[in-house]
Length: 72
Image 1 (tube, rainbow, N blue to C red):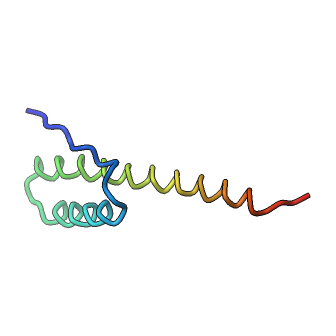
Image 2 (cartoon, rainbow, N blue to C red):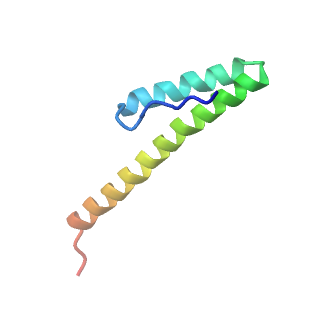
């Protein structure tokens, strides 16, 4: 039986980081290999969302800098 994760794109950045920390702790404490694998899959999903947001933020920051800095 496979369950799908809820859409995490709408959660706030601080909540995303909090969830990543919680899942990391649960992963480290888990001893059951199957449970560890499930937690890891979910954890990687949250981490990827975080990375995607950071890349998007960096791109936005770069665009904003391009508007501010005018080298001629």
